[in-house]
Image 1 (cartoon, rainbow, N blue to C red):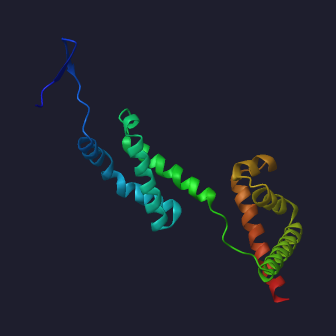
Image 2 (cartoon, rainbow, N blue to C red; image 1 turned 180 degrees about the vertical axis):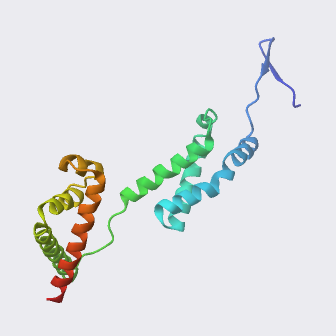
Image 3 (cartoon, one colour; image 1 turned 60 degrees about the horizontal axis):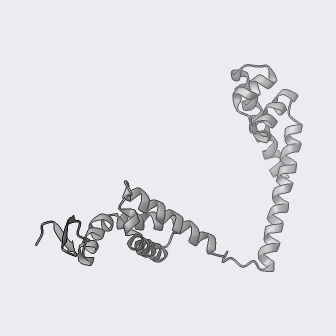
Length: 186
């Protein structure tokens, strides 16, 4: 009885009517459509979450959603892209829900403050060294490292060629290296 299905109502015959797939047919179709993507979904989740167990939970949750939405998904053209996007969104949701697990004790805070003070001191000394460079070298270094200017912008602002920018920076770095070595000897 695989042919078209006809039905009659009050003696009037209607047909053919499309048969609804059985649960077994739906299950088999779902397996054919989505199970081949499971490993790609798992790899994506592991890459985003860094945990095989969390990734497996996310993928399982995604498969529940896929099953629940299977009627709507029949219209989806690129199932793999849809699945990967679903996994990404679920991973992002999970990461947002997580709370930081690092507890900061007093020693950790004190060490962080010391490191911050040390970094500020190193920056202050480095800026003093740059100030001791010849004016054009100091200007090139400030543009390059404090304003993140590229070579073309430095050349334009200083009204020199890019080759001269490289020369100024090279000489400045050489001088700074010597200043750093002298500073470390103290």
